[in-house]
Length: 311
View 1 (cartoon, one colour):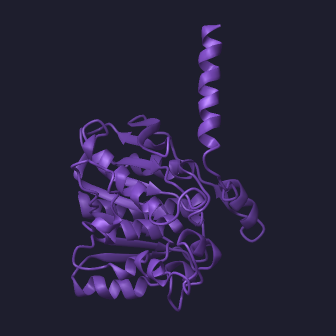
View 2: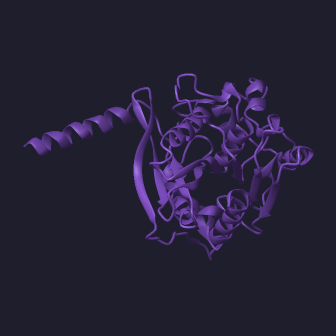
View 3: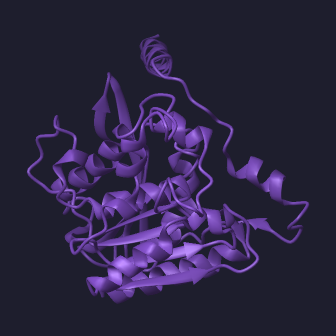
C-alpha cells in the first residue's frame, strides 16, 4: 500500500508539472526520418556504440524554473579524472525537440575522451527569448560548480548545438562575460564562459540576405523583425562576435539558409586571429546529424576540432 501511495504521489507531481507549460512534440527523429526517406532512401537512424568507459546518468536536475525542474543527461568518460566538457543543445525551431535527441551524439563524443551533457531548456511555448539562453548559461555554471563530480575540467568547456540549438550555441559563445545574457537570479560564483563553439547548421544572423527565418523565430523573439528589431539583432551571434569569442567549428548541410551570417562572422574572427573552420556535409539535408551515412562524418569533424582545441 505504501509503495502504491508513493507511486501515486510521483504520478501527480509529473501531471502537475506538465500542466504548467505547453509542449510541441512535432520535431522528432522519427518524423524527420519519415520526411526524408523518399528523397534519401539509403539513410538509417544513427546509433552510438556503447562504450564501457562511458557512464550515463539521466535526468540530473540543474535548476528549477517556476516550480518545475530542468534536467540534463550526462555521459562521462571514466578514463581520466577530468575531461573537457561538451554541452549539447537540441534543435527544433526554439519550439520543439528534446534532450533525448542528442543522446547518440553525446555518447559517441564521450567515448573519445569527453564529458558530455545533453540538456533540457525552456522552449518558446513555455518561455520566450532570452530565457532559453539563461538556461544554457545556468547549466554551464552548474557543471562548473560540480566539476569534479562530472569529471570536468572547468577551463575546457565547449558548447555544441544543432539547427536552432546551433544558433543558441553560437550566441552563448559570443556573449562570454556579457551580463545581459545571464540569469540575474543565479547566485553561482562560476562563470558561464565557454572555450569553444560547434555550430551545426545554425544561423548566425536572423536578419540577413541568406536568412529565411519567419514565424518560429518571430514567436521566440517576441515579434517579427518589424515589431521587435532589437531582439532580432541581439539574438544574432554575428552582432556580438569580437576578440573574446572562442574558436568556432561550423558544420553545415548544403542549404545556405542554415548558415546565414557565417561568412561574415568568419571575417570578424579572422580580424581577431581567432581560429575557425568550416566543414560541409555535401548533398545532405538539414537534420543530417540524426542519420547515417552523415553521423560518423559529423562526429569525426567534431572530435578533430575538440582535440585540436583541448588536447
